[in-house]
Image 1: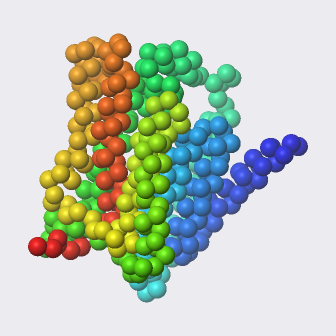
Image 2: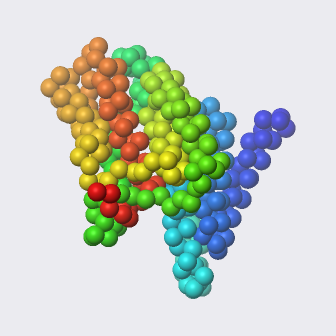
Image 3: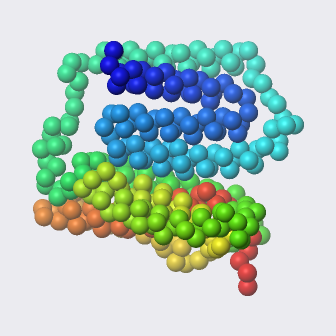
Length: 314
């Protein structure tokens, strides 16, 4: 057995153990920490599979942003956990176990019975990659071959944000989200909030910009930029804007709107929705990415911040 194979087997066993522990543990906060760890382990799996784009997305979105949202939810539920301890009945647990085993068996059967060689569109996609002018095949697939999926992903993030805003009390509607922080203005968190954001902004913009030709992209870059913004907010050095601000709402919808306009313009210029005319594919893809970037930064940061909890100062 080679060292690489031993590492892969160990990583697979560790992921299975972490997944089982995350499901079985009774404490919500411990389960969330297990989920974040599970996401970081999956990042290592994608690295081992030589898929750095997916690894970056998993680390940023799966382990990072989703983990932060779940930690916030667990903190809110912690008060009620001590008083409410509901344990599913035997029938419910049995049905859940049987359903889980059935799904696992079905997936295993499908994977083990794939035709050899497995059907794939990779050669056809690679053959047409040059027509997009984009060097990164992941970006080309997401914005040329699966444009509708990518658009819907951005819209889903916005819908999730609107859902969070809808939880605000009526008297705070249009007000400011407020991260709970007790940071000392001269403490270590404030120090890092002054030192790290300039570096993080450069890294986030760089990861976003190289996404057209190398591993990276808008989601990964937007997550880093949103994290830097939240670091400053969490340290008490700045405040989040009221959700009633016109410029905020324009930036939130601008990305998807630009995407939709360019997509349906393809019906006239290239004969199909979300198609690009010859010679203009890369500029249009970059225009979509640039338009989506501020939308994603704002949406991801405001998702973590939560619903408005105070009115802006007059």
